[in-house]
Length: 403
Image (tube, rainbow, N blue to C red; front, side):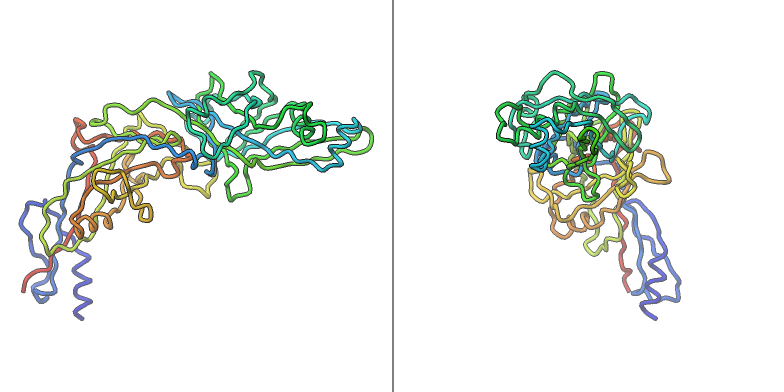
């Protein structure tokens, strides 16, 4: 019966400001030591917020997607390499001229898009002329990659879920023939540079080499022996990366800016209220308010992924004066289904950790799946003129009544 009574009382909530005196509630017939009082501590704003840029070249080369496009001041190009290893019989017949490449095309499955659904999206494709290792290719190195000016693609097709384009037959012939004894007479296969056109006003991410869905970027080439047969070979990309850029966020007191692909994160700090030493933490909720006029959220094409741009990672900083977070313990803030432009999430575990250890170094906010999600989310900041739109931390705690 004692446990049952406590559970009944836990379902009742009295809210008051942190400074208010506790108010008892409950049934007079329930013993005093079975009673709990609940309180809402509404910290109306974070006291500090700063952004920083963190790039992960290894993420971009090993991520599940590449990003291509232009939107506002963001731009992203990609590098893709296919292993064109044909059977020796094909190489021999190509060399002898008894077969020929009839057609070649590339298929890319979309993951997200940012910008208007029907906004302009297109790109050019160029043969890379340098040997490169995409695994740790920095942005500056990416921008210095040499490639031919000629566009080697044609017949571009785009819809919500797919992009396909043809490649010049001579390119595929070169890539196959460079593996023969006559290799010195053919350009080597260093991959392709894919660059958005100047009229593009949309960002798209495409499933890449590391995807587990079997829908990675793939090249197909069709060859024929005139009058005898036609056949098709295909290969997944075995190397890919991308490089995105945009201007750094500004006005960090009035706004907090998170950007995917370029990976701009935000550090936020709350002054913890003085709670009674015997307080029991029941729930802590982080609330953020989005300025939709300055933001663009990506839209997920594949429903097996999260709704693009609607989830924010929250990490707890573990060392003073650093940006180091506990990567094994990440919580989430998501877009509310009830209130437009409001993000909220349960971060009780982090607040309890601050209370237990006495070490409050702040939180790091970043876009979920930032290595392939080109969302830009601008939240109202710690000094925004409308106090109710600033970041908020709501803490509900309980005290056991004295006998």
